Figure (cartoon, each protein chain N blue to C red):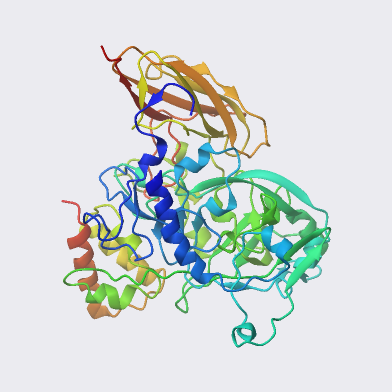
Length: 414
Length: 141
């Protein structure tokens, strides 16, 4: 590690305990996940098990066993611009998830308001023109656990996101093969996961037909150059660049062109946001219009420093992190050391594509004593900048405030 | 750091338990991370079925079979019968207990949503017991 740092390394954020040792075991943790991490959620509970028990996954934060919700430990984002498949977050709505997928038999239906209904095999898709795209996949409720006042739902810290290079085919090419009829308004996507209980709403999402045919939305069969982990939607996942992960339907096996707006539960009732700036309302507010959640907003994070870190007096401290523009690219990432009065540009890493994470880096000189609070903010290529104040809505959606860390300064001895 | 590695090893023992059989040549196997469980025929000691793959354009996808771990944990403490009997079919207990403190009215709304929107088959008699349990365990104020 480069100079400047003393004290707590990043991995000490994992407050590790073992079953039966010192009474640290969680009463509600499974026997296979007894080590824990502290997510520092306001008001708690903020202790979560960490686990390696999930197939094709390394160390993950266990938010829920079934259906699985697995969060990426934030340290992973310091490794590079792409998030490894075995550390990529996992989120399922319903507990009936096929655990065996035969790629030779797998079929994707394309049907509805089309000239020619199709049943495409994986081999059919592999034979079509291939495209690659880097894109951030972020849960609508990423960082929900940091909302104040707190709201119900998956209590994620900041690790329900990841960036990957996706390989597959354009949805437009698939739709053109079927021939979308005039009067089509939306395209609905369904995967192989199912509710446990009969009559419960199957998880389906839809996009306006023009969005579905924009040439960027794709069906991916590879992620970072490998087939997808089953828990990330093997063998085929919808990729909706710049939009929240709720639309990125996993184990995609049904594409239905609709000639009327989609009124299914997951569009009409769930995943709705206030139709207000930053999707923000007051906790007491009601009667506002809502719309389906849609485009992502800019975010940036420190990845090599945390609140718990101590730096040497007067030391040069390298700083780095990740940023993304949301539904467009990153224009700039800036650092403030004076509470947001002044901002200085950081150096941006290689541009991996409009919808990708972008690395940023800079350095500061630590003061002689005391502490220093650092803030980082991203401005995207549409000119949208992260807000100083967090938004609030009852769904816990679209959090993106300016992030800060407070570094302690160790005074020299003698 | 050493503690982290212990934690990884602890989990790896479990993962090793689910790696029973791997489809594909050794070369192919080394290039992918998928853990593949046995087909029933292989488990019975018969010859393994042909690897199930889909290919095209210089790329091959391999069939995958996994086992998901199950929490096996129940909601703890007195008054938990209702929630254990009605709620664990669809989801494990952990995320419920990880929720922040919320007013009892919010817990009532959650249980109502589970029943009305998500069709949870909760008997009328148990609704009050479930809401009371949640309010007792996780109540604001």
